Length: 372
Image 1 (spheres, rainbow, N blue to C red):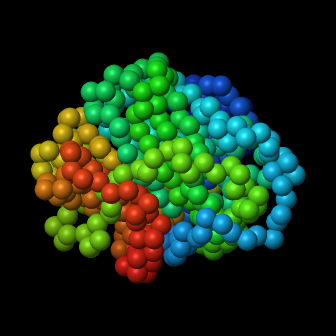
Image 2: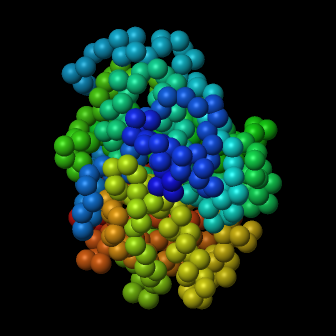
């Protein structure tokens, strides 16, 4: 049941026992209203391997906003409503539970909500077959979160049994990649966060091989690039991790993985906060950066870049270091063989942030990263 709590699962994959555990899970956010949705494959989609397969080379370009494909089907032929308001779905309402409230869970909780809301978006469009490939034939390349409220307001608005609205918008269609932006709002409408997710279309027979986004030209009417402002975050460190960086070890659990047996993208939000807590206990971080439950340490923004595909049983080393001057905590997750599978940042305080569009995508293909 904990495995299922991190993801949306195809209804036909649920056995009776799994369904019972899914419904009874104490850490599950309930989606209201329920609607047909596709399984989120925003984590990597190949069989687990060690070392993890690199993903960085798949994002060598964001691609233009227009693209040429061999498919010229109209939205109607794809089964998508031609109504202008189709792309303006009301989003998904999540009823929050206690595990969603605690500050160290904020990053992972938001990513979990966005995962489910994106799948729900595809279902509400009514184009299950046409959009199935986008959801199942893609891997997450990056997630950027900008929090719009401080800790006190987060705790007030995201309290047990209240509701949170997550509304996705198709932001960009490139040649082999596409992006969603999300607005996360309290039940009373107050904005809590903005999120940008970049995904790469892959060959499902070879998940390391990028392929053109299917039906991209036909899907362009769904684009709503102006609805959500840019997401501002702190970029990942451009230098190597410091030799003295604190390293926290963990093992990928079965409950961390999605149906395709790779660690789910939202779980990384939990991993980096767990690693920050361990570093704080060891005295390895400046006091103002150490604690998400402190107003100064609560995330102002977070960025996670996915570069590999660790699976159940893989040992992960999470390096953590902080910069008190910039208010940023840096993370680098690597395997025992040294291969880096994830880079991340959590920005705190009132320091200047950068638009994620300035580096998410283009900077992910930096030579230092693409060699991994």
